[in-house]
Structure formats: C-alpha cells, structure tokens
Length: 250
Image (cartoon, rainbow, N blue to C red):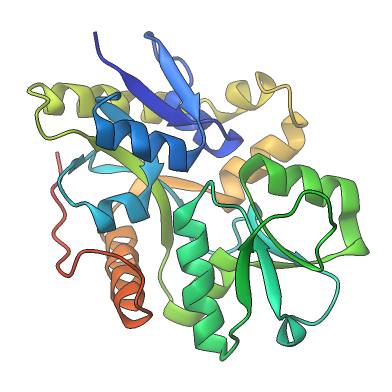
C-alpha cells in the first residue's frame, strides 16, 4: 500500500483533495523526517529537504509556489524591521526559515532567530501556512506584515517554490504515481470554485483569491530557476544544503 504524506495547510488542498487512498497529514518538518526514515513513500514537503538530501525524485510540473506576495509566509511585526534583535520562528517549515535568513542577510540585518516562546507575544514573529492566515484575519492592521515571497520575487525576478512532491528512490512505479498526482492537480485547479466551497476554515471568497492570486501549482522552468537561485543563496549564507543541485524529475 502506498504511504503518502501531505502538509496539513490550506495551500496544499489543490494538490491532495480527492486522493482516493489514506493520507498522513502533518507539519512539513515532521513529514521530512517520516520520508527520510522510510515511513512514507511519497510526501509533499518543503523544497529545502531536497536541497539537503537530493536522493529523492521530484514530481515534475507540480509545486506550491508564489510569483509575488504569498500572504501566508510572513513576518508579523509592530516595530520597524531594522530594529529587530530577535525574530521568533516556526520550526515547522525549514524552507521558510532558510528563506528568512537569506532575505535578512540581503538587507544587512542580523537578528537572532529563536524558537517561539508561546508564553510571550513577540514583537517580530515568523508565521507560515494556516497560522499566518488566522493571525492576519484576527489582528488585521494592528501589525505590519513582511511577505517573504513578495520580497524574494522583487529581489530576484523569479518565483519561489515552497514545496513539492518527493518520491523515495526505491519506489518502482514512481512515474505512475507522479502521473496520478499531476492529474489530480489539474482536476482541482480546474475546479477551484468547487474546492473553495469545500473548505470550512476560511470563507470561499478568501479561498478563491488565495488559490488564484497568491499560489501557483506548477513547477516549470521559472520555478526551477527560482529553486536554483535559492540553492545558490543558501550556499552563500552557509545554510546546510548539498553542494550540487541536480533535479531528479519524474
């Protein structure tokens, strides 16, 4: 039986909604561990996992990417970013943390990144996924929001790929699995209105806007170029990734 895992955020629904088998929904970092340990055969995980361990096969043509503001990978702050001495981070997504490190270094900022202390309300706070969406809905204009994907695109003129499907190297029918995942994505993207109505966490209006304006679900040449640029900047900033990047696509 195929063991498949998927991030539990709203942004992944167009890639998994309607899958006929069982799915292990979890946070990105947990899914990376399960995939590495062989507890999962296939998983939708953070792109940094492949940059660190390029042993997997990437399902070509499919990703969770942004071509500008993504809305749900943000630093919420109520003081100017130049004054930040510490930023509380969410360790659930190592890709977002690595992106934050690259963007901070580009701006000449060097705050300490620390695991969030839930007993305090930090001045500077990295939020990802559904938590970021809920925070923005609750706090509105009481905070400023630094959208990391928007800054990345302005800086590089490239999209940023946050996550894609990885298949373990020993899986023999990888092409068949990849084809099924591409077909599922195509069906869901073509039925965004129906998909938006099926989500209970947010309004259909927000959901449609999020899927149509903030997220892209392709992994084409520009997304691949963005991934290569991210790999280059990770190396420059001494973030732990493999020295060579070769995309093993299926």
